[in-house]
Image (cartoon, rainbow, N blue to C red; front, side):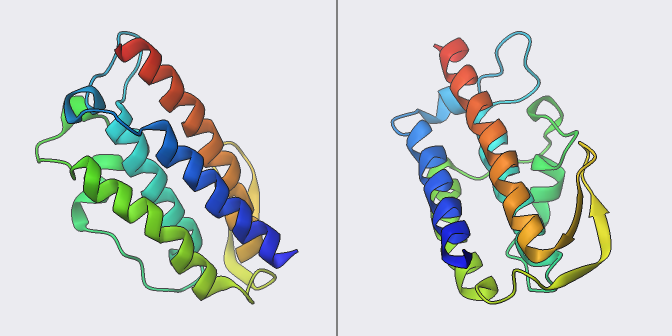
Length: 155
């Protein structure tokens, strides 16, 4: 069962990366009418949340620059950015490498409790490392759908 979760994390991440293949830097920053965020914001947000849910809550070191919170945290949006976000190439490299780090660091720790427990914005209570990682599949899936919608409206 452990390996299945890590395989799913890698597979979902590959879908995310594939969804933005061939996108230009300009298209990456379009915020269509009716949306708050861009493709770039969604990619950075996916990375940020995965980093926190996989590493921070497990007591592992996170690989986040200070700017990620300001740029990609929940409630942020490109219209408020006062600094340059990472280039697409950098984001894609970070996103591709992250599942491998998660697998290596957390393979035998899925049943380990996280204290205190955490309740997501959607009301889901998470109390083990495995629950945090499983929730990230749902989270990333939601953002893959948003990425697909943004691509359609950006063109």
